[in-house]
Amino acid sequence: MKHAAIFATLVLISACASQGPAPAPTAEQRGQAMVEQHCSGCHATGRTGDSPAPEAPPFRTLSANYRVDALQEAFAEGITVGHPAMPNFTFAPEDVEVLIAYLESIQDEPSPAQQ
Image (cartoon, rainbow, N blue to C red; front, side, top):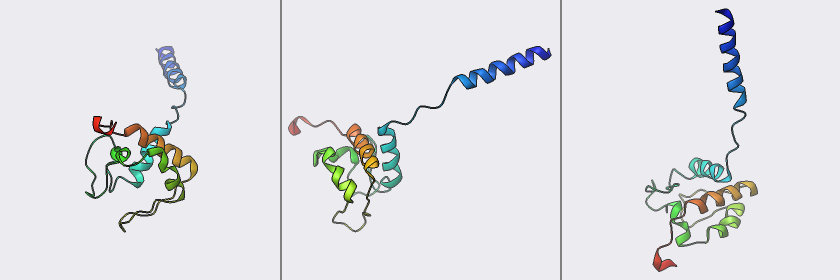
């Protein structure tokens, strides 16, 4: 009986050890975490839903007015807009890359009129 308990413990330990470390988050996942932390108080940051602040556009619609990859400079130098409720954000270059990756991944498909 004692040997069975030791064997069961060893099997459990080896099963846990063989799983290895969790995979590192992708650029899109890191970007999603950033926008959820910094932007979701006003903007809809996912593929669906309304923005909490009606004047704040959902991020999935940005490509209707901007080339998303063209926002890199604005994120790096600091986003400044014409309404005072929007705080000024400046992101490090590695953060800009993951923000752009995430934003590009959630854009609505263009309508036939936009193509």
